[in-house]
Length: 174
DNA sequence: AGAGGGATCCCA
DNA sequence: GGGATCCCTCTC
Image (cartoon, rainbow, N blue to C red):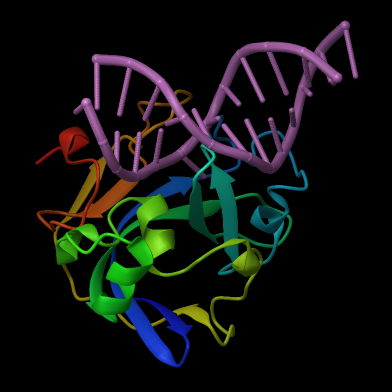
């Protein structure tokens, strides 16, 4: 479960879609070594790597290997569990259905008010953003990742099968 | 289906 | 410094 405390309120959601990026992976930001942008990706595990893309979107990753190793998991979607009204306000779209609030990595960061201030944050200790709890066993689907061109066939995307909060439904295997 | 959007990075 | 690229989103 991803949790964000904002103005004394808890925004929370079940993580239902992720993508993996490993050091040997040409699609990874870390593939060509450390830069100012991807610095956090080489930090200790279970920390946030937040980056800006396509001029409009922030995306949240969780580092997934030892310090010095550039590896992370992109958090692509959450099923909203609490703070839905605040999420809807943050999206600025009163018309959205619950399962659309945090569907897609850019939308997720908007709904949870996640921005560059969390780049490098310790997700086990940060007072305003953390990941906690155990995940109920659900059927997990595997597919290629979305929106990349290098290593595009690698089955590195993992999602809760059948969950409507999962993005990229056209690309899903059933 | 197609445009918009801006930061980043590589190579001159 | 320039330009290709980019782990996308919304509207048409």
